[in-house]
Amino acid sequence: MVKVSNSAVLKRIKAEVKAELKSLDCNKYDRTHNRHNR
Amino acid sequence: LVIDTILIKVAGSCNLDCNYCYVYHGQDSGHKTLSSIMSKETISKVVDNLLELAETQNTGFAIVLHGGEPLLLGFEKLKFLISSLREKLDRDKYPISIQTNGILITNELLDMLYEFQTDLSISLDGSKNINDIGRVDKNGESSYNDVMKSINILDNHQYSKFLFSGTLSVIQPNTDPSEVYKFFKDIKAPTISFLLQDGNYDSLPKYKSDFFSTEYGKWIIGLINEYINDENPIPIKFLDNILTLAMGGESQKEGSGTTKFGIAVIETDGEIRKNDTLRTTFDGADFYKKRPTVFNTSLKDFVNSTEFIEANSEQTELPEECKNCEVANICGGGMLLTRYSSENGFNNPSIYCNDHKLYINHILDIVKNYND
Image (cartoon, rainbow over all chains, first blue to last red; front, side):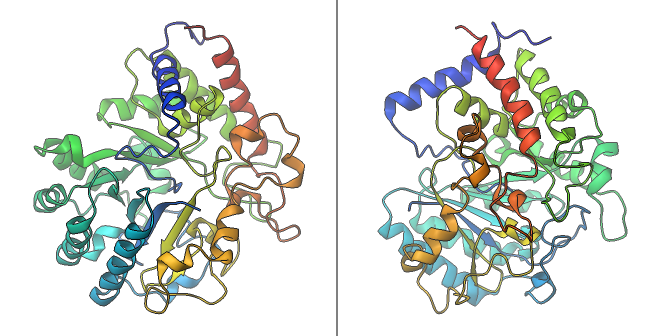
């Protein structure tokens, strides 16, 4: 059973998406950035 | 087109022989004739090309050292490569990372990598019984103990927090995703990510019975449930990417979303190639027409060529059948290599279409029910 209301993952991602939309920065370069899927 | 990632294949050989490897067990025969490691002369030309590109592009790009097994390049050449890059390129705008099986990690190597701000992602599929399914050496023997010894060295290094960026695993769908997730929590991996096994319409991915089957989709749902319910989760990068898209954000990874980006691959002999994962489709699939190299072509000019832009756009152009699909903006049509058939080329839904739909709809339900 998935309990979504207190999910730490969902809370973090939602905050990141809000920050991303606010900054309009589509080129986030955290140090593990790598678009290549390998 | 903004260049987002440069993949440098510094070694054409490997000290393992993983049975699913896209380099040695795909459709491509090129690896048989490639140099085993990049020469110093080629490294110098690669560095010149990247520094020139950095001067002409405002946004930074990620530099990933890949192979084969990139640590086979050896200490001195590796130091020459990353110190030359780091002399001009700062770590925030130009992250340098190495995707490695980890076996050749030593403390001396880690000190040097830290000095030049280069981090490591380790390829490992899970606990011994799971890792042994695919990740074996040339005698078919387990690589697990050697890799775990290296992870121990990495964990105990004073700068492990910087050096150890995460793990990358290939999904073995006949395993328990909870067990896999718990394993990576136990070894304190800072981030984890997962790959679908390679395959297409001509050659189905291992353990997938047909186009309609959802072995991988079900496995991923098991992983999602474990992840969402975890009070202290370690980031799973590919799921974070899908969750981000489901919440209205931008994709940060190829094979999902519709953001346009450029990836350039430089082979061990200096040839500039298309996305190397295409090698799983047919022999020569990653060749550009004129077979440009860093010796006869300026990378900064080539990335503005029609051929480069068209090759990179293929990933984000949806196949005809996907254009009206309600989750196409999230799956992005899946990885290009998974759309291939000898009949239609790349104009097919991904062979993983039904797996993608299954777990993406599960994520959309979760996001819909989440009110924070």
